[in-house]
Length: 454
Image (tube, rainbow, N blue to C red):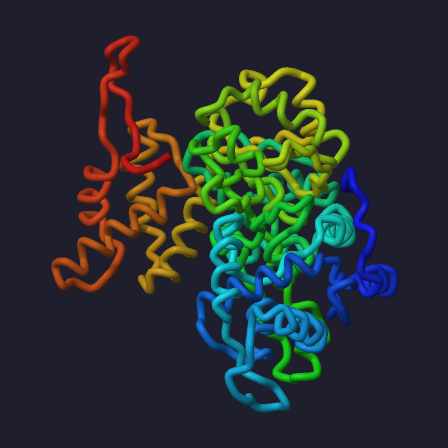
């Protein structure tokens, strides 16, 4: 919960949580029910008018994602203070509005104070309640959901049995093993084991600060489930229905991205990565290769991993308390015990090694990718590849190899206007370009590596 309680918490929001397991934000009937100060909404209105010039009251309400009925008194108040005026009638018993000279001056001052022009925000307390109502830990997916999520990728049965209880627990897990064996792919599929859709606010409001939350880089909007205008009016437009997020961060992760980032020029803040991943999965890929030391990340997250609560600081210096409600997955090519100490490992209860595929699974992977590349699968040619370029040379199998080698074969065939097919001579050609021998700096002996494999 937030350190300061939102005094006008939406009764519709609470009713939705109490009435049904599925969270759905109901449309507020007034600004008080929306939990927003009138001054904030007035500022958004005049800044919007400064951008568009002239627009109707209903269009303004649509731009702010608030119901028209909740804004009518605000329009009247702005008119009485001579900040906006009617510039003609609009359909549905509405008017077009423009700014007066006084309104233009006020809009300029408002934009200097905060340049945000967009949907009205949601109070922090409403967001906190929504995250707790939609927590991923309440899902506890079973075997059927796991089978469905991994239905179109190859995964051996022993690994499947290890992943199942870990995902069901909703606790964090380490996926470790050699590069190119699908750790990142597995982590991204795990999100699909849980309920598909959640609601998130577009922007959050707390202590006079606006925090942008919805991020198209991580949040995929769910398809609209109704064309009914009545149905459309049944939810709060300040919220967006999305697929459960999978936020993936790699070597670019910094401590700054784990905090609320404030832009002093626009005076608008951006939610932290872990906030954006709430009710979904947060994948820390290539753990141990970030710009920050693993110990720093340990110290930052050791309390949130235990308590499921995170403390963040606003630009004003105020501390806020937000949920830490995601499944955290660490993917690494290194041994977990070499990266962090026992205190951290204890809070990540599942450590699962993703090993190399067997020759049998290698064939299965070729079958899958031959289908995707619209190429006939020929087991005898795959056997030739295995015997000639792997088993006889001691080169280890990786799950990425079938996809990558077939991709090079397709490029070769398309360039030469040849049909895409599995042929021994094609594998001889692409293996030479895909793999290379480099000298190991320690002993001067050749060491084989795959080009482009991380």
